[in-house]
Length: 87
Image (cartoon, rainbow, N blue to C red):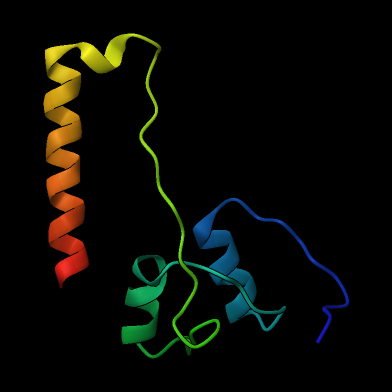
């Protein structure tokens, strides 16, 4: 299937409103549309058998990764990610 037109929209609420208006479909993360799906406004489907996965990275200025507060933040972030992945 090939779409007739693709429109890039950076605002989640804009995508949701276009879908609600019947102007197409959107590809969004679960967390971005859960409220709308729970309220029965939208239907959701996974893309592929296991959904669509994204790789996230932390970004910082060169050299800052050795700063104590940055190291602590990265350690907390890694712990949070591990906790979420286990769910």
